[in-house]
Amino acid sequence: MLYFPIINATGNTEIIEVPLNGPDLIATDARGIKYKGLDYLTTISHLRLLSSEDGIHFSEPENNASLFGSGYLERFGIEDCRVSQMGATYYLTYTAVSDNGVGVGLRTTNNWVDFELRA
Image (cartoon, rainbow, N blue to C red; front, side, top):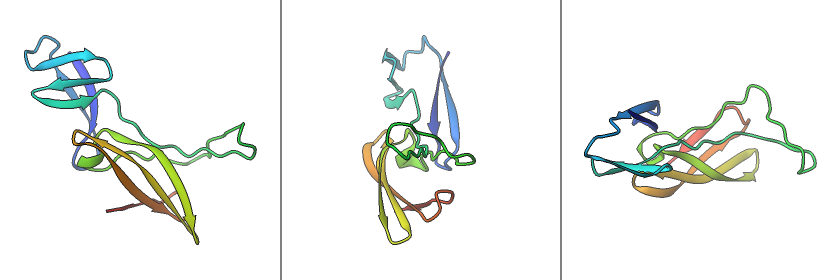
C-alpha cells in the first residue's frame, strides 16, 4: 500500500491509502503521484515561526503552533511565506498548493498566536 496526506475540505489532515499495484496509480516520482486521474503531492508543507536577533542563530518560540493549509485550495499545504507589518497587524502572504496548482494565500495576525484567513 501507498499512503500520503492531504488536507480535506474541513481543514483536517486525511491519509489516502492506495494499492501499489492498482491500475489507476502512476508513481514514477516520489514527490508526487497520479491516482485515478488526479495529481497528489506526497507531502504537506506548512509554516512555522522562527526568530533571530542576529540573522544567524534562530529559535522557535515555545507554544507557537504551526500553520497548515485550510480548505480545498490549500490541501497540499502552504509555503514560501512573506511578512509585512502595517500598524499592529502582520500580513502573511504565502504560496498555497492544491491539485489546481499554486496560488497566493493571505493570513493576518496581531499576536503571532491567532491567525485569520483572508479570502
